[in-house]
Length: 452
Image (cartoon, rainbow, N blue to C red; front, side, top):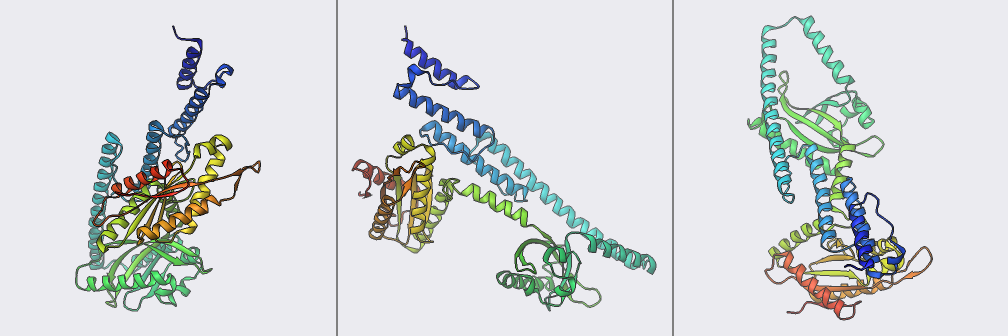
């Protein structure tokens, strides 16, 4: 027969798992440290699960273990999937999932179908463009009445002058605009006359001007060689300059056309403002690759960048070292001062490391209170010096609670160097982890090498 305390504990844990509103911890169990700890961990796990189920992918969970780790992985995967979905909404149908089983198959089938639909639409547009060209030729051959032609021209002029997008033509030889619709003043603050009085460079940032002018020259030669024709459309994102000096991100859809009267090769285009769309895309990319608490690279993004650096160093034969850094007694910080202070501690360590590293080095949060640092073109001796400096700086962090209590932080650091010819990041991570545990087991607040 179970004891009353065991019955109460089992009933409490069952209610936490099944009840819509979890019960309070009974007074007779509050003094049981293990029960109390398990009770609060289950509540935090409920909160984390509810947040994910409700679509909140920014919630952080301080608990550890297999179940929490699996949920954090699901949360990261859902964040990544959100970013991929936005990329699809922006027209990038190359996105694929490989981590959600049957859902990945359905998602990938959908993107493949969308990509096929886009190809069909593009081919239809090319067919329509050829049909329109034929109709224009037929109209020219039949020599419609001058009055009807004038009316038609007036209609199209009114359309281009009242639409929000900017319609323009550019002489590819002189790089001067020959026509710009009035809507350019709403977009960039300049009148059409001001735009046409200056070369293409004036509309762009210096970097964009160099790249775009070269592209136009190359495409002009391709057009003259017959490799590009008037039915081919090109789309690009271009950073332009407003009259007040601020940058504007625009999307231009263009085609190369030969002027029937002058024989000049012209660029016909439509430009629209995509600043808001681009800002949203960049924010989604940031959320998918950045740890929300610290602002540094998340685990997935760090591993991706680190593997690229290892591949590069393998090709060029440069030294590279990996540090695994863990905040000592972090659970005690949370238990003593609360999770809010624990978050501040994680942020303080991340900021301290970030300010001391070079731009070429990589810093990422691997989960919980653990960080990884990739020191590029750095041998083991120099890496040890960096690790010792970071350890000392963390020890000197001035962190206080709202009650002015001093929170003292230390870190243990594991260090390993990439071996000659080694290419697999997972092997390097494993050695750095082993060195980190060695530092933990040797008294903490220290740096330890991995020794074969």
